[in-house]
Length: 360
Ligand SMILES: [Zn+2]
Ligand SMILES: [Zn+2]
Image 1 (tube, rainbow, N blue to C red):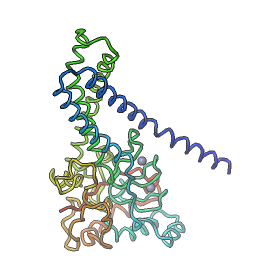
Image 2 (tube, rainbow, N blue to C red; image 1 turned 90 degrees about the horizontal axis):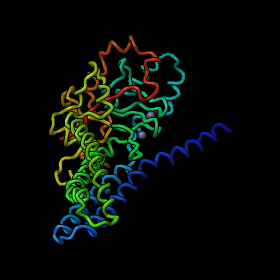
Image 3 (cartoon, rainbow, N blue to C red; image 1 turned 45 degrees about the vertical axis):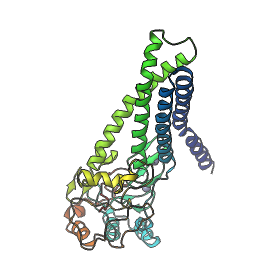
Image 4 (cartoon, helix red, strand yellow; image 1 turned 60 degrees about the vertical axis):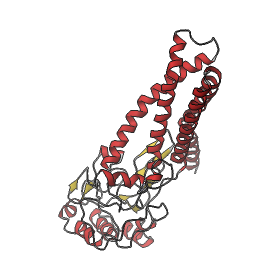
């Protein structure tokens, strides 16, 4: 009992500590607001027109940046639907079997009714022991959140949240707006930064805020730009960070482009079909996060029209992609040879799975 009590205290302390990076970013942002608005615009800039334009653009970027950051932090990651969880009877059945091959047989039977295309490296069904569920394509178990996260990209300490299907668009916008925010500060602060060194500024405390503002904004611009460019590339390729590290395994083997449907569709899978929602941190990604169209599978006549793209539309048909899926599920000689308990994805994190969202 004592160990479990101390474990929960440890876990509670960890949860508090996880917020430190978010607090750090928030303090820097709050200081940058004070330094830019009060010390630079109000105190140091004399030209009224320049002051108004700077303040206006700054506040637009500031609001969008904080909004996107807030959404990335506080949007709960989506977990697999109950259809992917083992039923009580299946759990009992699975526990009774100690042979990996028989367990795989059970999992394979359950997977037949689910839109699952990816496998472990050994060709086994991806199963999470901790959550007791069959992992949907692109879903991974996050050890920090201790949950299976749909289309998991990575666990980001700077937002103390998992970046995945539910908030990837927000994360992209957070990167974009924070980069614009830093670039705008760098560009408008530059002339005053030069004045600092040429003694063109009056000797007030504003001088030091202006100097540090320039250093901080330009340094953050560089790191944000590289991260943003990398994630733009991932969006174009329809890969998550995990999938970029380790290509997903399909029936026919690994395929890093397995979920790519071409640039336009890849982009719309994350940002949605309606252009007016693209720049706004409102959920507009397509699909349900559990099933993804893949270029490896031909359009199935049984597959219904594309998901609505709304976050609430979590339904997929009870037997989606049955025909194409059974094509993937059957004639799988490699499984029967390598399906052992050891092969199974026991840690729940070992295999990146890639799938593509249904879209129009
Ligand atoms: Zn899990
Ligand atoms: Zn996580």
